[in-house]
Amino acid sequence: MPNRPRVDPLELGADDLRAMMIQWGEPPYRADQLRRFALKGVLIESMTALPASLRSRLNETLADNRVIIVREMADDRDGCAKYLYRLSDGQCVEGVRMRYNHGDTLCVSTQAGCRMGCGFCASTLNGLARNLTAGEMLGQIAAASERSTVGNIVLMGSGEALDNYDSAMAFLRAVNDPQGFNIGMRRVSLSTCGMADEIERFASEGLPVTLCVSLHAPDDGTRRALMPIARRYPLPRLIAACKKYLRETGRRVIFEYALISGVNDSPAHARRLAALIRGMQSHVNLIPLNPIPERDLRPSSEPVAARFQRELESAGVSVTRRRALGGGVQGACGQLRQSVMER
Ligand code: SAH
Image 1 (cartoon, rainbow, N blue to C red):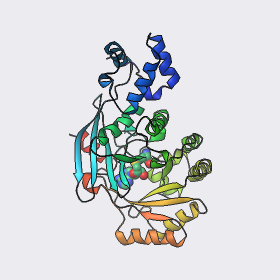
Image 2 (cartoon, rainbow, N blue to C red):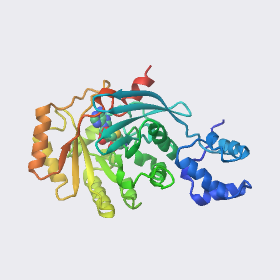
Image 3 (cartoon, rainbow, N blue to C red):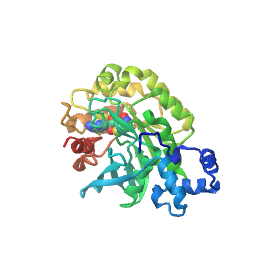
Image 4 (cartoon, rainbow, N blue to C red):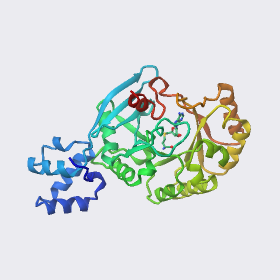
C-alpha cells in the first residue's frame, strides 16, 4: 500500500463512522459493528460478521492496527513479564506486565521511540520513529490479555502520551468503553515528562485518570540537565498545571522521581522537593534508576535512597519507594526495544 494516511476507527467519532458507511452505500449500523470489533482489538480480516466486500474496502482505508507479541520475557521472582510487540510496519514497542495483589497492570506504549530526549531514558536514544494509533495502543492490551487478564493500565511505556494527544485521548475513551475492555478511568494512569500546556488541556477533558509527572529534580537547573522539556516548561509553570489538574479532576498527582547518584539525591534536594510541592495533594514515587549502558548515570545507594525518603517524610510528604519491578526483564523504558534494534 502507498503511504496514504489511514484512519483508525477508534479515532473517528461515531457520527463520522456512520457517515462513511452511508457514503459507501452500507447500512449505518455497520459503523457500530465496526466500532464494537475495534474496541476489542479485532483485526479487520477477522470481522467476519461484516461482508467480505466491506472488509476489503475497510482494509484499504483503515489503519492496520496489528500488534503481535514477538518476544516475551518472564521474571518468575516477581511475576513480571516484558513483551516486545511488532506493529504492522515492522516497528517495535515494548510493554511490561506487573503483577500486584490487586491484579495485573499493563504498561502501554504510545509512540515508537520518543523525541523528549531525557538523559536517562533508553526510549529516546534514536528519537521518535512514529506515533501509535489508538488502535495500536488497544492492540497491546488485546495481545497481553491473551496471556492474563489486564485490570489496570499505565501509559508509561515508550513515548510521551501527551505528545500524541489525540490518539491517547481516543485510546482512553476506548479502553473505558463498556463494549470494549471496560477498564475504569480510575484504573488508568498517564505519565508525562511535564508538558504543562497539554496537562492543562488534559485536565479539561474531565477524565478521572491519575496523572503521573516525571519530576526527577526539585530545581530547574538540575532538571534542565536531565530533561530538555524543562527548558520549555520551567517548574513554576509545571506545578501550576499540576494544580489545575488536581482542581479539575480531584485526583492527587503522582510525582515520579528516579534517584540518580550524585545528581538529584542529596538531603538538600529532598528538602527542596518538599518545599516545591508543599500543600499540594500529591504523592512522590521514588524509583531506583535503571542504568542504561549508553549513559553514565548510576542509581543512588540504598542508604542514600533511604535518607532521601526519610527527609521527605519528616517534611510531611506522602512518599513510597517503588519496588524495583521488572529489573530481571530489562524493565526500564526502551531497554528491550533498544537491545533488539541494535542487532
Ligand atoms: N513519557 C512519559 C513516560 C515515560 S516512561 C514520562 O516521561 O513520564 C515512565 C517513567 O520511567 C518516567 O517517569 C521516566 O522518567 C522513567 N524512566 C525512564 N528511564 C528510566 C530509567 N532508566 N530508570 C528509571 N526510570 C526511568
